[in-house]
Image 1 (tube, one colour):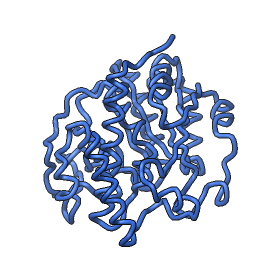
Image 2 (image 1 turned 30 degrees about the vertical axis):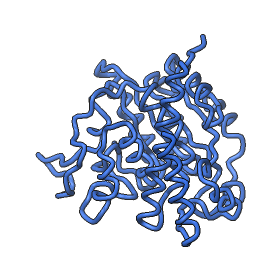
Image 3 (image 1 turned 30 degrees about the horizontal axis):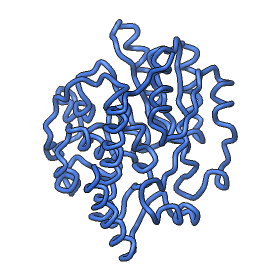
Length: 306
């Protein structure tokens, strides 16, 4: 069955995606560094998840987050980052914690976070940390060590099923996490438990901190491996909004756990980033003066057209 996305919704998703890129780029300019490529590669995916795919409900958190006070302790859970997502019933878990700024940008682009917070609350004592934790807006799990969040999401999916609670748990993971044994253990558990309320979206950007994955630790045919583990697998180009939407809607109908391999271009949206990709300097972007000026100019062009 075709889940056609109306043209006005394609336009809106595209606007949100471009806003995500612009907000993430402004972060990189302000801080003279940031995880810009992760936002560029997942912008359309995050825009679709937040505006079309998930039923996140209304956010209960303030648009300007409080300052960080303390870690959770008995009787005081502290700030919960997932409160910025909404009351549910669906939940979105961001596994790679260095994608946090991309997710903050998404919250700003969808009106759940004040855009001014991206600059003013990413300072010392603010909750918008570059490497997000469970108190960071939009982050449900502390997962700075990759490969943790998927296992946590499996546990929460099992608990939801036992409690008869509605809604699905969606998990964004990075392809670098496929080098972690805990990821494959979690996938085996998801299949063994037939978790029909667990949906996984994989950002296949083919890079990691030390360079291209093909030269650091090749992981082969990801789709074939996931199918061999028993998952329902969809594979799409990460920047084709209608096709992404179709696969995400199809995943909702899966009887067991399903995964979307989203083949992304982490340089997408800004003119000089692809050259960095070719020289393995894209995982964390620091800007020279010429790049900074060019990025500011291209961000300005985005805001003029969104």
